[in-house]
Length: 219
Image (spheres, rainbow, N blue to C red):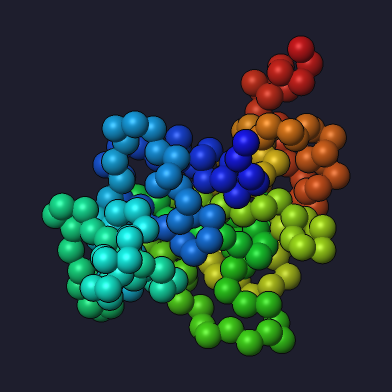
């Protein structure tokens, strides 16, 4: 059986098309390559300066000093390349990246994203998230539905400082899959071991329900 984080990563892996250029954030997103369907290939970008990233490297490759933006060892696929940070962010800002997948502290009904700082806490900086959420064609948030205190991370309005305004296209949690449109959140899928009553209780923001979900609930 997969744990919560693996379930989230597995669901997102099914969504990504073959050949997509994808930036994977720290945490849950790094698990996604483990769950890709057989034959599915991604061109993974790491914001610190690599394209064509393979799964986490073994110790031999790690001795070469290649790491992702989170400092974890990586290796490159055949044809992969490394470059400096300036070139990397030129890629980010060019619109070449199809998907950026990252975690969040909060996401709200308008698609606003807060993921870089909790006020009063010490952080090293915002990293490249602010560029990534505006530069990618689609932004997917991968996160557990509730924080460690049991509070909803999907809210009506973000209280933490924003990483990006109206940038999120899809939210995948351990309980559900939501899309974000101009009217707000739309429930697309209920994850295993979840149900509509649990979702109502666990989600601070209002959401609409896709017709196919309504029919499944009715039946």
